Length: 106
Figure 1 (cartoon, rainbow, N blue to C red):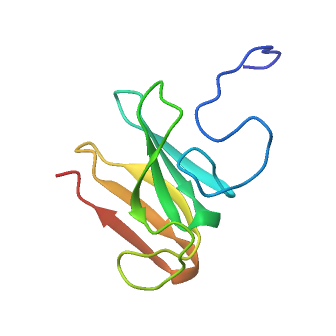
Figure 2: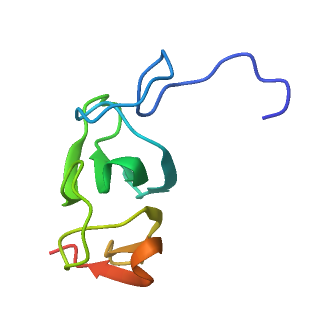
Figure 3: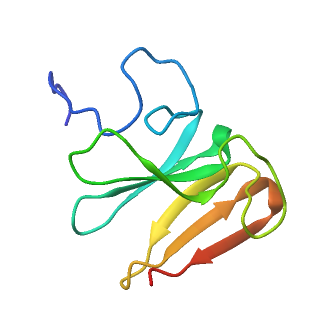
């Protein structure tokens, strides 16, 4: 909201540095929120997708391998955007691998 003076940290750290722990992000780019308020974040500099439960500051890597670039189906090269469909399947734009990957919810 324009003119807002308060905000809530959803993910990352307050000092603006990058990293690769579960709560640090390296060039985060895209975020998708599910109906429960959970966040799916494209952590492109760490080549992974991080999942943060609503209200939690520690994430879990649900796709990709932290700090490992690659071309096979379990690795990313600059994951930039994430979105969810109505069944909570996750779609990831893997930019430098020139592909969109779908990860099934169940």
